[in-house]
Length: 510
Ligand code: AHR
Image (cartoon, rainbow, N blue to C red; front, side, top):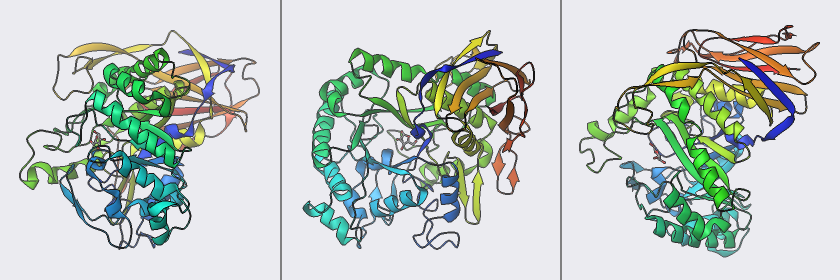
């Protein structure tokens, strides 16, 4: 495919928070994941040094916490101070010791070097409890909660800038689910109180690409929000853990922009497109496996609802399909960087995350290497590209083009673009960096580039994430998927570059 890069036409400055992450009190993300007191690999605060190092390696810019469904019945006050009250987490039906709370979370963010982003309890919680949390974190000394933070050994405010009102209060599975009308009212009051505590906070609220919900939300408090949160898992396998294979995952890449376009249209119609950005603050190809939990009839035996969660730890499930899909999603966010200002991979540690922990170390799953490649080798400016005759491939979509459903629909043949390409520019080093994904499972493809002024006398290198085949994955003691950095070479006369099958590539040209 031919691709012309217009270095003079910048689509926007990619917000580094597009490479954000999420961590929830679910299974082994916190306890037994990043927070593992007593493990020799942990530091004086019980945090896994190897995990923190891996997070720094992909320059985690923002880390959303503590949920997710967990937060909708979470009482933050029980998890600060010397006396921690274990509580029964009604979302995931486990006892949470509350030994990892706000103070521990903020300290972890400081060690990672990322912005904290707290999602508040708009399920059982009140606007007052949400704004009390902001007082605790952000006021100097005024009021009881700032004084409580100081008593707990933190004299300086935490300056938590990003706050979400609620998680997925639109969903019947969520504790404290609300009607669209109730939601608009609650968010308005919570936004008012939070901004009265700290007007410098940036606020988002739970939303989805649904007109009625969003119109109500934005009508009531559009003028008080800085972000709107949307979530998406394409391979919805909460009840089955039947991970889609490579071909089906490629079919999902046809559905990467749908929700962004819907929200863009609504914000524009309401005149809010310059004020409110999209926080895609939970996304992952694969939904998490937790059978009999998001259902009306709950599991009774632990074998039915609790122990199956361990199956998320099966590293063989996370293959080049996850890497190729995630790269296409990140390309989509970059293409829409004028509106998508944040995206949080859900989650970062264990479950379906990019970092897997075990007692003796970590495994960097295929998706980790995509973040490493994009964060460290792409530019911050997104350039306009024009593609000539993009090739398409036909794939079978077992869900009949309907992603986000569990049941198998009618099989349909669907056409997808074979390559997914964006161009970026690293201003400081004057390097053009093209992210080029070849979705074809078997065949290498060739990308012919052109740019104003041509490439003569310039050098290039290709940095690639790939494995032997589409099912390659990383596990303890086995690394089948790697990030390989090529050597600098003169740009070939025809400016044509080979893209290996099922590969994620960044072509840097200096
Ligand atoms: O499957 C995990 C859940 O997905 C998160 O807790 C929630 O926010 C989303 O529904």
